[in-house]
Image (cartoon, rainbow, N blue to C red; front, side, top):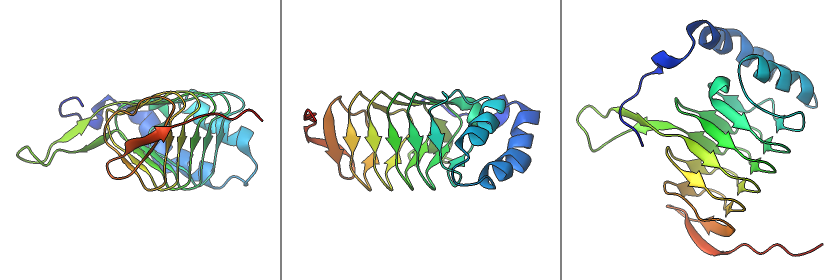
Length: 177
């Protein structure tokens, strides 16, 4: 994690428009209107592909700091929030109620200052329901994070991780179909 940060680096007009107009337009799209939602997110600076899907109930705090890969899905009520960048690779799933937060308070310093760090999720990962991913975390390629996990450290590739804190439990082996 990096040191204390502030939200002052956000483009003021873009941040205001997203907070007071964009988020509401985003939420009031129909269930299957993925293309209009992608267009709205793209107009606010999010980098995503024509095959990315973001559910209308997802909470996107700063779209200009987020990159979503090909065939990536962000589920209902998932939250992508914070002041640093969030990068999600190709063929990933961020399940419902998952929270990716790039800033939090540091309880070990006077005044509990905000500290932030980027989140990187590589290709072919699945962050299961109700999981919390903390600032500065990298989830390597092919990793599955079990439901309700707390990811506060980097996770190695091609593993299945679970728990609080999330730890690798076994290797992830892809079976041929």
